[in-house]
Length: 314
Ligand code: BDR
Ligand code: CA
Image (cartoon, rainbow, N blue to C red):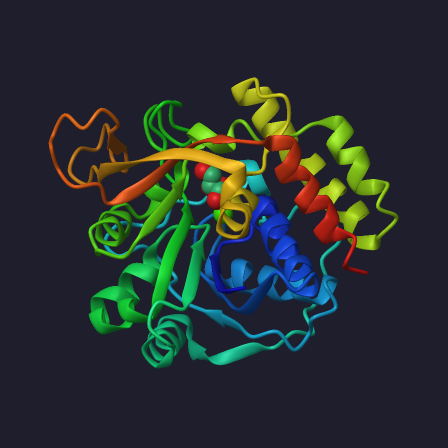
């Protein structure tokens, strides 16, 4: 079973991903080691607090949560309150977290853990801007040894952008970090909007979450309902896209997804196309692939795994 660290900026779909990971751990399908928080959808104060609140919901109040970067490597932080609300988790009541914040910085934790892990043993799932991961790899290139694979949510190629006409939010917020991670030589699987827009939380799926009869199933339905309004109105989707759960699911159930190994580069120079992921889908550059670019998902099966994981939680 895979050893998993989630790097995240919760975010309603991040919350779904984190709850899914706790459920998968209880199903014995993953060894969920830690969460590292990063600034993204909202500031780090909120994302690191939200990650701990979500662990409380899962009844995992001793789960290790670390706080990392407060802003991208070079650019000013761009947030997405219009999607996720002021707190990042608008739609449900939030409490003061019982899960403590670990004293170490997230980047120090990542370096230390990856350095001392068995080679190729840890799966990293970054589902926010890639600032923490890029910093760890830049400060301690040897820590790449400990990574089995990075399975990240980010980028867009066949779909248009969701924060600018061309760019996806996570890559746009820290394009320099995204470029560094993609060039790191670590095996990478990317779940871009090309696939996440095929995994939407429709009304029947939301109802199925409520019908789990669990507190978390009902709460997740409420959270996703609040977030879904933005994407259905703005992008004409059939429901809110389950962006971040796609990354967790792809790390654990890769057979539910389809894609292709490609060379992918991230734009860091032009304001107009900042953060755009340029995918050499047809191999026109002749450059060696650095990313497994995912474009297909069995959405019903993905959703059922999310539902089954919720059944494990209070
Ligand atoms: C990504 O941006 C965030 O708003 C979501 O949580 C997801 O990680 C989608 O572009
Ligand atoms: Ca996210």
